[in-house]
Image (cartoon, rainbow, N blue to C red):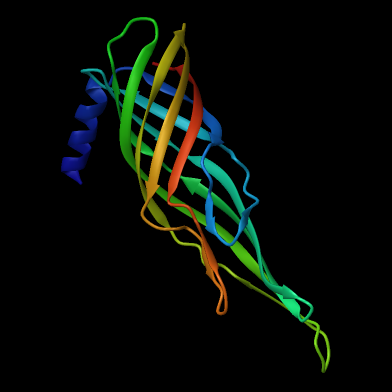
Amino acid sequence: MRGFLIFFTAWAAIAQPVVVGITGGGRVTGDVTGAATSESKRYVAGPAFELGLPLGLGVEVDALYRHDGYRSNICCNFAGGSYNRAHFNSWEFPMLLKYRIPVPAVKPFAEAGFAPRVGSGAIDSTLIQLLPPAPVRQIHSSAPWQTSQGLVAGGGVRLELGRLRLSPELRYTRWNNSATYYNYSNGPSYQSSQNQVDVLLGIGWKVR
């Protein structure tokens, strides 16, 4: 514990600018594979914190919210059908090391890091049977949501207007698993994509 405090104190002492703000944008890639239709919102948004370091380096930490959803059906004929609808809220926490390339005016940067992802939600399944002896409608809910970890890489530019910081960027994340999935016992399955590309705009304010 003492070693950690010494390291943190030394790190803070050499720190340069501190920027707080928000990051938001949208996903440009598909978010589900297999026998399902996406009902996800493409937007992503959340608070952002950046700490400047010497040698053109910096550390950024974000907390990004998404709302995901999927719809699928199988065995839909005169005898009945099975329908699924998934809905999830997820939070991603990218922790990024940034390198600011020394170019005047438009300040390009590259970034790489790690992103845990957590979420909550459910898959509501409906089974409709139309054949005798009697029509049956069954509904049950499950929540096969997995915590994920992602590797992140990206880049963009920074515009500085007084203390205001504008940072448009392109960011790629590769997740280690599919956060949600569903396997039919007698048909195809679907799962959320492990590849994610976002176009983002960071809006920050230099507080130090």
